[in-house]
Image: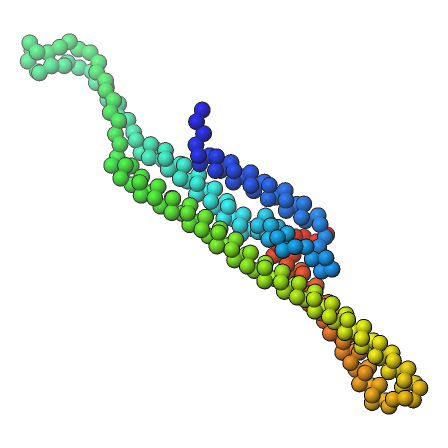
Length: 230
């Protein structure tokens, strides 16, 4: 039994889709937070496995490949057979040439010219559609990877900013406590104490803002990668 190359390609495609789905289910069970950002490849691999757009193009590629396979035999639908049968005398019409009465039958296979001439063009169009769906998938993968890289780097940046905000708040907190102690001891005036306190509360606000920005950036990254949080 001969196995066509196209059938092997289809089998490989379906196998890869099953592996991707299994891998995506494994990733979904993990809980990723801003405190422990996994490496970039984890998000890219997950996006490749979970992206609905990629799955759509993979389905379209399989569909176009099947269409090409069907075109190999589609022209046979336009072939038809004409069967003719008759009963009577056979001969040239002269009494001496006439044969005895009997049955006669024949069959003719007819192939329309359009079945031959148009089949090559249909195959060419089907091949172009298949190649177009493959190119669209490659373009989508490239754009998705670039988007995830940008979002990942932004998330890492937000995490670094948050670390700086935490350190700045610690310094401001120490200054505020020291200033409060000096103010109660009469060593500084109220305006000096107010400025130090203002800096402290300003850093506290910036810290909360950084927390929210990091949380949002991480949520967007997880959504792009198709990773669901429990």
